[in-house]
Length: 130
Length: 209
Image 1 (cartoon, rainbow over the protein chains, first blue to last red):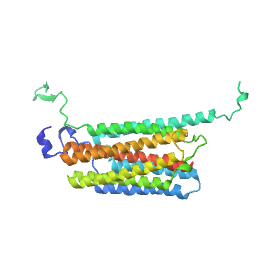
Image 2: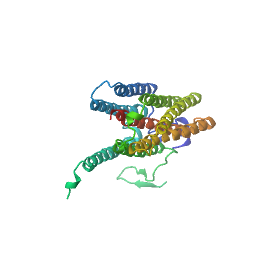
Image 3: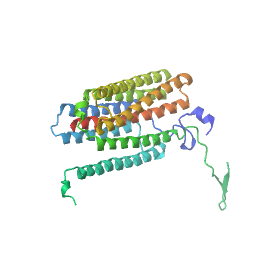
Image 4: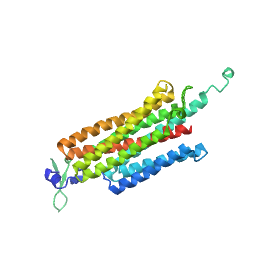
């Protein structure tokens, strides 16, 4: 890697280790698609909750959660330019690891603490306990 | 650089560089920054888990329905989403080396970020004025910790944005400045991703509780 190489082509370099070699860039089109999808995916859940269009709250909550998950993916792809190729796949690896940790941490906490709440609530008649 | 020579039968010697080759400055910055973002993601995940566990403990105090104004949250979400797309435009103009346009888009991004913070602080001030302070209940403690941490990230993002605008104004769109702007781009979009979780998990689901 020489200075000359930088001067000629700042975004490319030998050994696949150039400063920007790993990161992919977006285009105007991809940003606009991402923005359009985000607007829809934000507006719909707000509209659902604010108007109460669906009477069943559990169904509304489920739809809102699914839309949020889709929007997170949209942001990852169109704004953060996530793909399996950047940095030879290491960004994707780091993200997969993080997602696994987050899922274990979140569901684990909620699950354990929910059961703790259910079983520790003073609903039982304590006088019957040995 | 040391070189190992492997001589194969009746053929030319083959040379291998056994030392690690040079890495240009900043070659690993983007991956390193991405890993930082992932660790930040874990912080937020744990704050979300805390909120998920404590979010229903109102201690006979105000509940989400008494406190949250979804119109204000929708406005706030719009501000952050707009700041995300304007930062994207700043990146696109940066690639074309149009320094003036880049600075202008960065400034617009900063204004949207500032609007977001202003609205959020107004909301917090309103809540605290009504007695819904972090000390009131476990729900409010976890709420202020989660949303406050996000707001703090946006604040530092804004400071960083101003710093980079000054840097760009003084030194131009140099290789280092481009790299820094790309890091901030990732940081800024990441904060928008976290906000999706906040408005869904805290505000929308809170109103449905």
